[in-house]
Image (cartoon, rainbow, N blue to C red):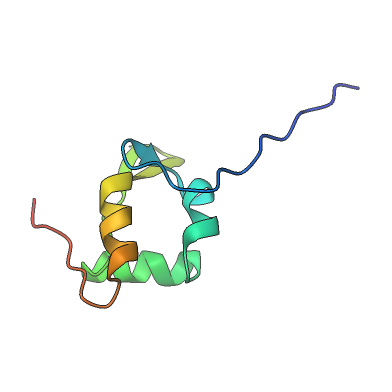
Length: 77
């Protein structure tokens, strides 16, 4: 039986790049479902679909949202 090594959770969210929900979850003050609802309303970063089961979020937008979640508005693309 093979064992899998668990990677340590980073202490901070990288400023650049993209993250999946599981990478962002330790820094989020709300649940995944509430975050999805806010994104749908344009009040959280918009997800980027890379495949059927792969959704990512731009880290720069996640940092903007974390800095001021109440007043955040997604940019109209």
